[in-house]
Image (cartoon, rainbow, N blue to C red; front, top):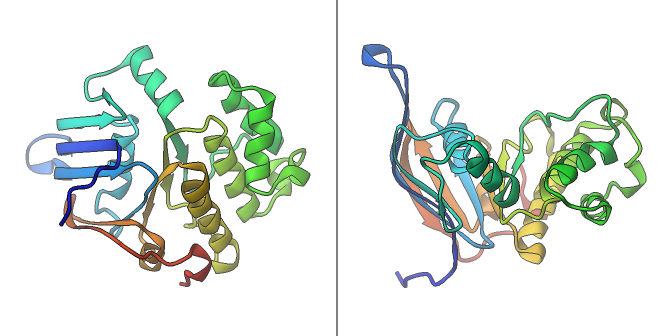
Amino acid sequence: MPVSTRTVVARLTQVDRTYGEGPTAIHALRDVELTIEEGEIAVILGPSGSGKTTLLNVMGGIDRPTAGRVVVGDVDITDLDGEDLTDVRREAVGFVFQFFNLVPTLTARENVELIAELTSRDGEAVGWALGEVGLTDRADHFPGQLSGGEQQRVAIARAVSKRPPLLLCDEPTGALDLETGRPILVLLQRLAREDGHTVVIVTHNQPIAAMADHVVRLRSGRIVEDRRVENPVDASEVEW
């Protein structure tokens, strides 16, 4: 297999993550070696409890490995804390959470503005992000006035408003059916193809892997499959 010349956006080297000690310890990740490259869509598969979300959190600096190293961009974040780690998460990483985590008392626009202000982005970035997810005409609605798919798109707009090199998505269609979930996948694929975001999607929904450039499969905290795909399908063709 030829050596890739693409820029590495995230690299995990011999990463373990253990919770607790002794016989009751939970080994969420075991000796994980993983490289995520610029502009790719990586789909991480595995059943519940396989370590998918832990891997995403370690990659994004929300959680810290028990052993091994984690590099995001050109920064080794393994031992960072305080402002240094906050700076990396603020500038280099966008998170899309499974259950949206929107502030219910803020409109869609205000939810996006909240992150844009924290990252020193201007109002133009907010308008751009809402336009990217097709919610310009719903910007002044509160989360309770939006459908599940619309709320997820607000969550994505919030994450991409700071234009992060790395976009981490935890079960982005987990609460959605095919009709509302497929447009989310189309959007994520477009953000990678047209806007250059590197997108990592954690899911238990195996058919989503058809749209991936890079497929990773976890079982009991270990990577059991790690392959790149030459001809991923268009997200609009994904079915489940």
